Image 1 (cartoon, helix red, strand yellow):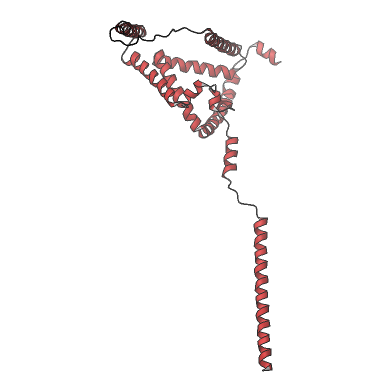
Image 2 (cartoon, rainbow, N blue to C red):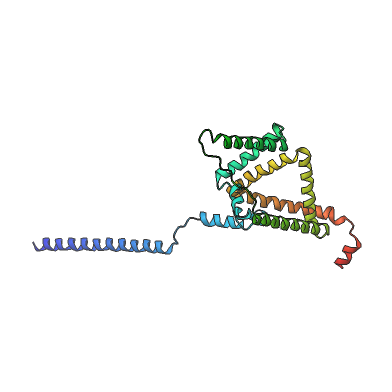
Length: 263
């Protein structure tokens, strides 16, 4: 019995030591896992920093720093061009399309249209005013239309400022100080002359209206892709201009006045 009891005690001691060893290994592995999880930095998606860095690296078109809505003034005209109010934008574009169809497709004339419109309006109001006494209906309410002075003065002042700014730009170009601006303006005027030869003023005005109602809203939707492509194209144009300047512009003889200024 004594030997059997000692054998049982040895087995219990061995089982106890085995359990303690297992518990020690499991606790050490848990502590190692905790250390790994605490030492390793939390996994964060790198998509947002990459996107933000990509947006910061992309140069905006024409050096733009403000949103597209602010570039167009941030008021009702910007809302119309960017389709913030779809009913007004669609109505404006539809009206311009109807006017273009009347004058270009149907070959209606402006004076004829105004006269016919006034004739119909005056005849309808005249008949309504005289027939209201017989059909016991209320007379038409004809509002008093007058042009306020303040908006007209504000429009005239804004137009005057823009015209003066255009004259200042033209004077700066004509003075021969900026060759790049001179070439850009000449190219733009040449392109406008080609467009003017292909279509009349009304068609050109309608094209401008359609472009203003389509290009800004598409650009606002895909501005990152457009700005990236424009940046690459502008870089290529600058390289070509450097080559053109080295091969052609630098060989043009300069007048004595410009040489004296440089001296």
